[in-house]
Amino acid sequence: MSKRLSRLPISRNKAALGAIAIALLAAGIPALGQNKKPESLLPPGFGEQTPAPVQTAPRAIAPAPVAPHTPLVLNDVGTPAVPEPSPIPTESPTPVPIDPATLAKYDMPDYARRSLAQVGTLGVSAGGVEPADFGNADGLYLESLMRAMRAPVASRWLSIALRRTLLSRVDTPARMNGADFAAERAWLLLRMGEVDAARAVVQAVDTQNYTPKLYQIAMQVALAGADPAGMCPILKGQETSGDAAWELAQVICAGLSGKPAVAGPLLDSVRKRKVASGIDYLLAEKTMGLGAQGRRAVTIEWAGIDRLSAWRYGLATATGVEIPEELFLTVGPQVAYWRATAPMLSASVRAPMADLAAAQGVFSSTALVDLYGEIDDTDDQSLAGASVARDLRAAYVEPAAVDRLAALKRLWDEPTGARAKYARLVLTARAAARISATDGKDEANRLVAAMLCAGLDRTAAMRWRADALRGGDAWAMLALSDPEPNGQVAYGDVDSYRSGDATQDRLKTKMLVAGLAGLGRLSEADATKLFGTLEVSVGVQNAWTRAIDQAAWRHQPATVVLLAAVGMQTRDWHGVPPAALYRIVRALSAVGREGEARMIAAEAIARL
Image (cartoon, rainbow, N blue to C red; front, top):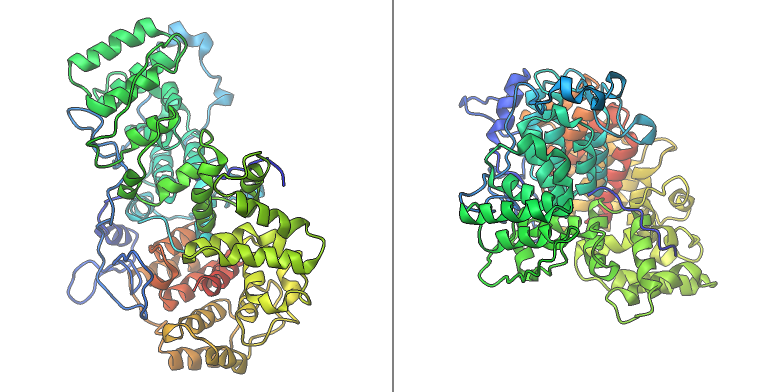
């Protein structure tokens, strides 16, 4: 296995969910019931977050926008406190003052300047959406959807689709400044755990076009990426802001620029004016000392610190200061994804976080294999992850299929949690593709699931169509993911699957029917009959169903992806109602995103 690590881009917000209903009203979508109160945008079954998978069927509950953890924010950098970086709209860019007469020769030529009319980095040929794929969706409406979204979402494949959408070079919507639109996208990407993608979106805007909102998010991106030097190119625009964090950033950037004579007095001024104190001040001093001629030995003590902030995480990680594990319990799961791609951490330290990131879609199967390959190439086989790396090598290189399959089974059987088990499927996707249907028939379910979670549908998984046991999970996943289906799925085949479904309330069968119906692979009569038998109410209308249906009807693929993510604001597939999956799959298929629709539907079977 190669040592190359193909790092992929790696993000909670307290904004009220009521903002979504307001945005829907602004867009002309009905969101009021008979009681004239705002209607929740979420499908039935959302809002109440639980730490463990729900063991009963999804039920309608009231939305609860309170996050179950302390958000990773910059609100205790110093005294006075720095406000939480909840972006606020701005009507126009705030350019950095420049004297044209003095700096004319250094000005960027007009042909090199980037317009705010279209912002992003990912083109269509690289997997991005078309520039006009948000259609005529109102900018404030899209802003409200992104601001209020509770990320990460349940589906790995939907998370990947959302990342690509937010990264894409798209037209700035009406009533939205291009820099502010970039800030909202980057802020959501950070909450998804996609720190590299967030950095790319922020850097797609020229610094002279930064707005107050984008300055806020740019600092968050630099801290999330443990890259304090990332604050320095945009420091000029915030030198007089009076913000405590930016004052400390001036100290850090002076030190990193090799100017201790400037950094020292700035740091003394910060201390005398009590801009910052305690561990936040010491971390800034330690970071400042990383520059040439810094010569500062600073000891960081975590005693008495009861939570982690973005400032503490970013500077501690950048300077090699070990953060107590208990502090990571005070932040969301996205921080684990940030750590998974932090280049200053060793492969063995990153491996457990990389597993979680792979299950979420932040890490690709190839990147995860490369990471364990790096561990396998080290001389110290006592490192964490070394046994996994050895089994992974065996799964690829053992000459006999029975030995490769035995290594795969060891990898699959070892983890205990559902997320960790799914991560192992992502890790072993291409090794699973080397097992033939004849050799692996007893492990067909996990082999097919592994191939599909890495998108190996056409090249590998579809070879199993003729051999997958009718009524088994492998058959169900292939029926959903088949890119070239041979007609519709028969009622009797679905009924056979239902008879062997051991999940509570036959949830897998409900998801299978929802996916097949959304893809149009059941006749209308069979779909109606099965939904009735399984007591799945797909005809219920609410603000979210109307919004995603209307976006599909208007052919707005990017808006559909965003609304699909709104419909999966839960960390576990047990919290996704089958009716919501049906709407999501149907809408994605209608706007030409059938590939993602097929993978999301198959993922539901693999993860329940």
